[in-house]
Length: 305
Length: 251
Image (cartoon, rainbow over all chains, first blue to last red; front, side, top):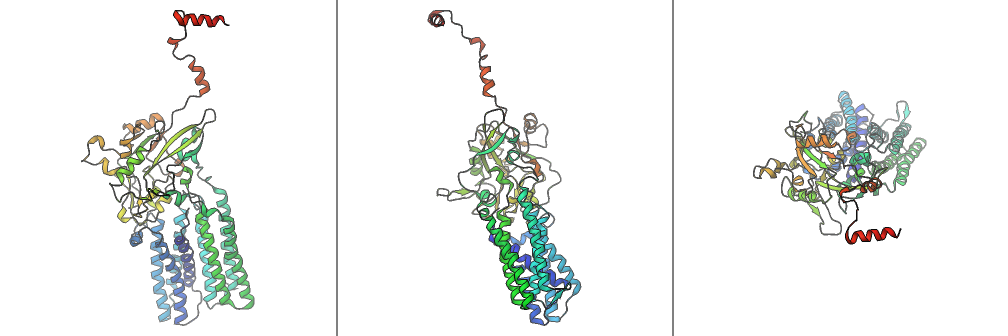
């Protein structure tokens, strides 16, 4: 599948923003005072909004994007949009009450946490629902999205929050654990994706054309001499060329570097700068991971080409 | 509305006869011709006379080579357009309601004014039946020539999709699959019409008729000896008879 930069930016950035929002809703301690609280909330909301705005750049008609809120009964993309707007609105109310009236409304926070998690789940389901793309068509896809979202949120919250210990663990250690869990999920996802092919549905050029009953089927002539929307969008090959290098880059920047920085933060005590560095490195790694998520995914229509 | 109708009164669709299709691309061209001026935005091309031409088409013909285990390879021309599936995954993923399946006749359409051009419907379709228009940035697909088949301004004989009307080999047929006595239903039954990728659970309405089995040349050669027994060589008279006898004598 064609890896669109706007969609990669959207899924990574909104995911992390919602991860931080999830933790703020659960009551992760922040520095007191109006300005620190406002900045924390703006960071969580800002990352989420930046991602959502980026996602509209991928649309042919962004001016009609509001129409996407209407079909939540059948469409995961619509559900994602509705959930994101509801979550952000409630989080806005929560943030204002917290910053200006020093009221951290516990119950509203929990609701926001649930909604933030559901939003990330809905984002992942846009891809996981597609039977046409076997790599994505698995509950492991939302698992990875949720795990990365949480890991990003934990590192950010550890960097900017006031807590030194959470769940009776030093926050850099908690960050490291969240990272390792997320990448373990991704390794399982990669291992499944490497094996699945079209074996789940048994599709091949023979079933696609129905001519497999007669003999071995192969394409003799393409419908047109040039490229078309389908080949550019769904039979995208070039992005896979450097897959192994990109996986290595994703693992080094997304896992190894942030882990080292977490342990350095713990041993030196310079938690804020080192964890922020770790967060930036993780984001870079996630961009590489998300590029591959699209570029390596094979679509059923490629069986006709 | 992107929820699918429980049932549709009619199931309008196409039968495509792979035994007959000669791969002339006339249906492709006439489809583009009609649909660039009919329903919705024009079907645009990018660089049509340049180095890298591309554009939106609602119907494309692939050509496949089949190699059976016990017969020589054969070529099959394979027209492909929207199959107007009963469980159309392209419809349910649409976030805006632009994509819908009509409950009266089962045609899957896009209301272009509502389409945001997200492309998710094209991702959900296993057949590559939907293409984004490169200029209008809305999703285009086969409408089954909805603006021909119900068009009172056309003669009744012309109220059929452009691809069907134009096919010089009569490889394409249009009709109602909900009616067991329609020509398309009977053809499908008699010729073993089949679904593309049934494992995707889309329940396509359009059906494909398989190519008829080809004779194996090895058996065909022995059969040719018995061909035209009325003309079996017998030379008794005239010049040919004399040549025949002369050659026989040579051993």
